[in-house]
Length: 103
Ligand SMILES: [Zn+2]
Image 1 (cartoon, rainbow, N blue to C red):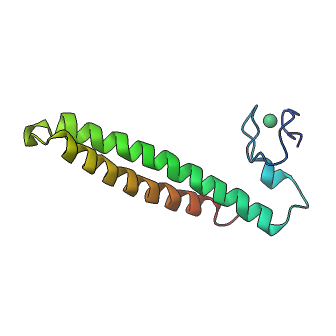
Image 2: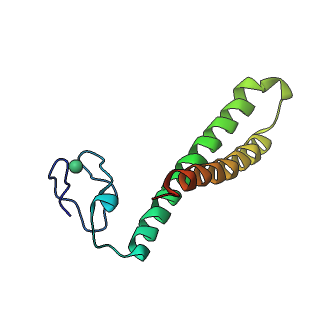
């Protein structure tokens, strides 16, 4: 698929232009609703993934350094960070759904 903004060549399934980040799926006419839904699902998963990583790092960092006075062992910190990853994934997906709900 050729990007309408920068004319870079992207693969047919690319959601965002590799070159400039333009959302190709909304520019392209003739795609089925299923295709658009799949693209939105992909965006949701991406946001969920970012949220998970962010949540994991954030909670891990806070438990390890900010709340160091609690003297949690590494297992407890890891468990807390996993909880943060889970929460972050959900928050990321909620943000993604809010963002693409109307498209
Ligand atoms: Zn582009």
